[in-house]
Image (cartoon, rainbow, N blue to C red):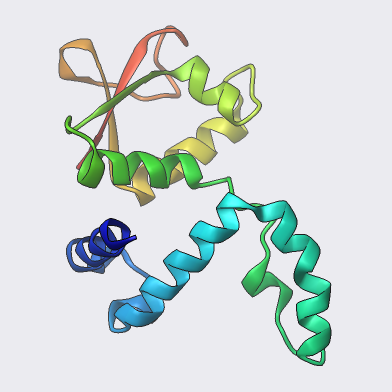
Length: 154
């Protein structure tokens, strides 16, 4: 637990410009939300099942969207990728085939929707994609879905 708190402290300090305004000046809220969402990720089904009881005790004043998420996994890959590269990994990059990444999101083809989804997240998380030889690549126009892509945080 202490390692997680130290990691959260480091991330809050080093990534502060990328945090929501509500977290930039409030480390305590940052840490409590990290701990909450970490627990939530571990046992989402059980916590979601308990929500009606919690809401009943609060006289229905709790905001469901603040405590339960159906789209939680949408950005999880990119968040993990950024944290792994910057804070946890021994390497300053990660590698994966585009086909593997598409499969994680349930895509079999490189559709316009998937490319738009991917490009938005790469920009938001400041992640650059390259092929062998550090050749910058565009996921929309790269030739082969089975080429190995290297992800680096800019």
